[in-house]
Image (cartoon, rainbow, N blue to C red; front, side, top):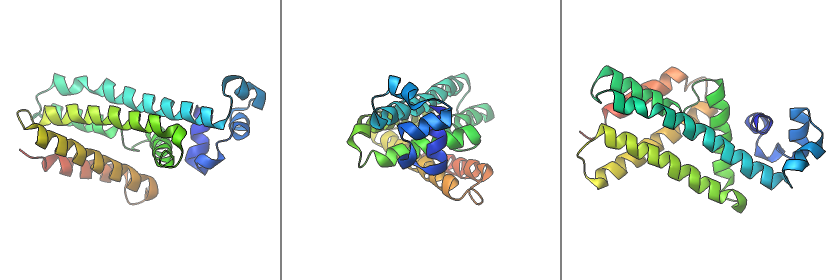
Length: 187
């Protein structure tokens, strides 16, 4: 998977063929074909793996929300830590964010990726729903849904800008914008 992700992060999804992945991984193409019948199967598996990696980090950070009062400095730090797992704040998250965005974009025109794109959205949206529910207890379902969608849009935008304009949208700027967003949540 790491070879697939490196190729996508550097050269784009279109270059991630069985042969290119085998070369990047230092394997014979037959070794890759032993596990994957073709590029579509390899890409679908790679998309699932990047989703699983991101969601696992999000879920690992979720207990921090319950461990601290939401209004405390520790609670705010826990929220920022969790949300930061979706942003390219270090090399690993940058590669995964780039790969995740590439797959999500490709799923619009590649039907074999659609199921994983749907799963990706559902799983990340569920975590964002839990975050918003923790931040805004007692709010109506309508407000919670709207705030969760607004948070997802903010995170997607920050991620895209940080990947496309890393000189401007630095990790510090991402965190500052995210803190500003959290300050503006409905009371």
